Length: 448
Image (cartoon, rainbow, N blue to C red):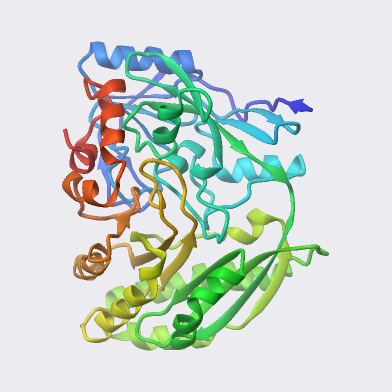
């Protein structure tokens, strides 16, 4: 059975008075010549043709959760709120087609109402579907990969105003690249995802000592469908999370416990601790020791997106690298040693996740089983020295930076870590020879 959903709000393709656009973290700003919200692929095509006629570049933005300037433009800013329909839910095919501006939180809720689910998710769901796939957003999984790897078809509006559809069977070379397209090949107008009947996940969250996590990392990643952990700098403490499918029954976190853990402690108290640490960095190691020891084990069972995701209200900047899976433990140990012999003061935990190899041209997991190591700093804190040290560790091990998170790598580096890099740039030359979708970030990471 196929169902078609209504649009979540009225849409308009009219231009909007321009103002400075900023990303969620506040570290990227852009002031476009004009800002528009096209309400259909045809309106989007007209926007792109007009931009080209006026000699302007054009970039689509999502919800601004990237920490890089991948969506920044001084030309035409294409806002997401005009394309927010879930076009169809096809139970027989096991697919859902959502327009580019649908946020993952709305997609998840709509799927749950239909008794369906994505197979895997990242840990937040504020992003638009197009923004999430275009930058390679991922969660953690032994067998199930990134959000982009769950895409079965795309609708893409290219620089000449053409509306292309692509899949593994139709324009497969475009499909292979455009699922993580960085906004360089065109503007995604709709995404079709594979879905499955909704299922239950049991989450087991448990504090664990650093050395134990390191010694058991391979086993934990292999024996659990979804494994991740957080290491608290300045301590030997970690918090692990293992998510596995369950026959039930559902046993969600009690409302009060969930509010205390996920809102009061993880957002309210953590916000205050980060603010104190920024004002008085010397307090950070002590705060880290207290907060990491305050963690307790908990187990709960719920539908997938309620297990995979958590509210993230404390604003930060982030760097994340994907390493070959076999390099993870050595890199994490070196990172810990680097922090311990430095004067860094790190208030945010280091997050480690895994993903299987996929076949997407510029996916960070393209062609290799991967481990992701993410480092964060509270917004407004000094981060450059720490991120520089982390990046050295990662690049020595052929690391691939997340496309939406902070890094300093350029096209020369990416040619060495992506075997199919020139395949992507060649397709870009064909689809956008005039660089309508170009900006400073793309010139750095893809070349001119």
